[in-house]
Image (cartoon, rainbow, N blue to C red; front, top):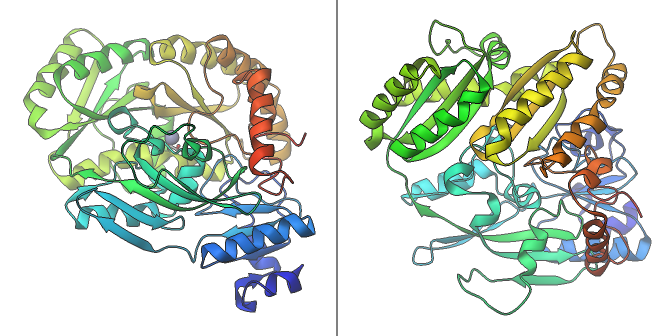
Length: 457
Ligand code: 2HG
Ligand code: ZN
């Protein structure tokens, strides 16, 4: 295989050392075997076409690899696959200020795209804690969401065009940055969220928008989760929200132990809401805060007085995932309709409490989008395998509760390997059969990220 790969790539861009395979063969998950056959670093679309054709002829599999910040194993190579890293395809190719569209290669790091926009007085609004490492190709492959979805939507909403290489090695230019295009099936949207199972996203046309006005961040202590939506509704009526997030006291304690940031205020609450809104609405926000206190929904609160304080408040939310990572959590990324969130959260919280009274549960997430991250933390004296085995016993009941509310078993992290066997809880047999048929159209020999999203047929 190495020889055939070296016919396409210079030797230094084909790596097979155990150290390199260990780095590029895995994402932020830690529960899957890591065993790629090689890692290659293309620099051109032609090289990606060539390696895809080779995979079809020689019968090996390919795993597309971006910033490897995924949490569902979508970029893990466990079976001798060739990992195709986009680390060297990280150029911004073009920017048109009239269209406000930037064309970039898939390996551009999300934070770099955000900076590129800011340098032009514009804004790329998709944002999350891992934006300093994640790449736009990976964001597109998972239709990444993050912390500003309530105002700006998902990655999908900002993609004006895609260049892809299909699993058969064909290059497609989908939508070409157009605003309007009524010419039939929009193949671009099939590749967004496909987790690399149909082909490679190699370039993207990404829309930017005008820079937002100054923002304020507010953190509120909320006594009952059932009051969270009343708080959301009150603020939605008063200010223009850019974010409405939540976290539990237990999640907060991990960030405080891990990062050099203070508590938002002295008093404790079981839950906290974090809001970001246009600064012009500050007075209205303070009045709304008083009203939510008077209603008994909110105990205490704080509003940012400086950018540094806003950042420190955001750290309380964005720092959670990293601060609990050493406890190798059993992770879930669930969504239900926003109106169903309080009952759903109560139901799951009760279920977890009954089954695992001895385990620590951290709740946080994008509650304003109906997206909850449930993390159960491993006790130090339990092995990782024994812990996951214990947690997985509850997965069917958990996902049954999701199905009962017609929710999603993966709101934003993707299905990958982690949620693959549970896909039928969110998608019908007819849908899954159609997804398989779509995969066969674009990837007839099944070389693209096999075993991810859909179990091998
Ligand atoms: C977040 O919202 C990320 O912080 C990570 O989606 C969630 O670690 C998680 O479960
Ligand atoms: Zn999230």
